[in-house]
Length: 394
Image (tube, rainbow, N blue to C red):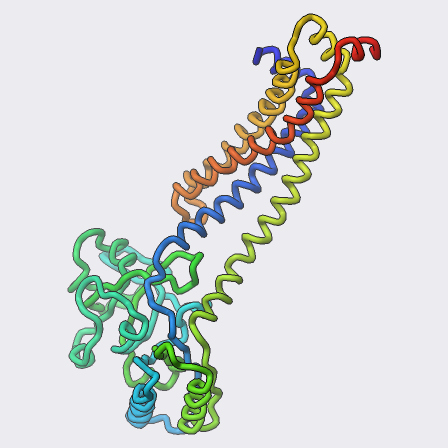
């Protein structure tokens, strides 16, 4: 039977070639959509790594005229104490500008035993950072006052960077260095991975450096952990207090949950656009399949009537048309799968191979479903043709 169907399809190769190209393009677009969607879902299912609820971000600019580091240190340490003394404030921390969900990044390249590690995210933080964001220390310890007097430069990395450099071995006490800089940096702690780019982006390799007195010249962010009862009136009071302390400074207070919602919307824009394009393409393909099969029925009424006259059942006639459509789709999927499997083999976009393989399976099932759905009704119409009527028309 399949040999006969292949022969029928080959005899109409010009007509079927356009349909094969349409289905192929639809498959490739759906493969892209499912790859994006599967990867986004995998990232969404992973924990955020921080407790961002009731965390505010204070943005300011250093308006103090003094350039003396000691004077700046005294001023900003006093400011932080005044903020933490407020009854609604549970903790506060100075940090660099790349706070969670801010789309701000700072990266550097590192070396370990002659191996270069590109694009390691850099954060400058203080002792209160983990308590403010609820970060878990997996290995070693977080910064304390003893680390400030250390003669050796120290740092803390996330678990992803630890596994990339040391695998399952301990990272504590190991040394790394900046690219083209021979000064060694000692690792004293490892923390959990954090998704700084929202729910739908994965965590990345990161390194957390302790701020020093010179950092007050350029640091412009304070993370604030507040109690659940902190409301708009408290925010207004906090803003006035900061404005009185930081004269001529632009003060802005944001809430991390709101920043997360905004960032998630931006992240999903490409997926939404791609899905809309895919929907229009699938509709066109579905209409094309439906139209081709409908045209074939009208053109082959004599053939169908003859088959019915010599004893073919309506079900066999219907299944023939459906199988023809599925075989044409299979040709497209074989070609499309050849291109799709190149993505995990070549590690395109640095995504896990399981993402591409899952997307490949979903795209194949989706295309078969569309083709089957579009061919069932024309097949049913073909099965309803009466032999006498079809032969009389011929």
